[in-house]
Length: 258
Image 1 (cartoon, rainbow, N blue to C red):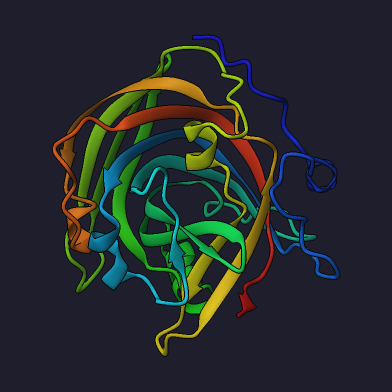
Image 2: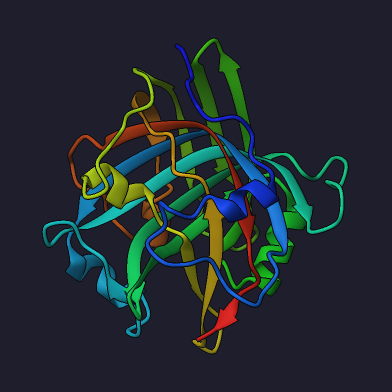
């Protein structure tokens, strides 16, 4: 499969690539972390708004497409993780990660709400739970490549957490698509903020920046999937919408209290 994705982008270049964004990058604040996401699968399922409403802070509006909310399962490899001005830390900057998410809006800014984030990096899990108020969990994970086919295994091992498993394989089935700005594909992927809440319910927003997603159609063979059920959500008995991204470079800002 030919991956006609853009070349790697430096933070300086990313700060200049803003025409695709729905709102400006943060002003008067420095970005704090850079990272690259590789070999992503987006597996999206429709879900009733009423199912998710009790699980999301009331200050956040659940974003919908034609009145329906969506759950996304996103396995990928995180690499090149580094703080601003520092090189990547050896042995800790590359690891698999698996996200379960939906889409929300506050003050006109569309973003992501995470139900869970599993990672094979204890330091990342500790840091994200403590400083970013995100529901990260330890997991035993592997990601491997055989040609254009990605093999992915994730078994949650976090003490005291509900077990969750995701096992499967996926691959792109076509080249990067030029989806229209008002397309469902762009709606599902183009988000430049995340929302989180601390244990007292205080809400935060984290801003991110990357180039436009280079989205390809995909196919997947999902053999085991209890990762969404671990958050108390039952998936519909429908086939997911599947998309693939080979890599994308990202910079992030510190959380901002709302």
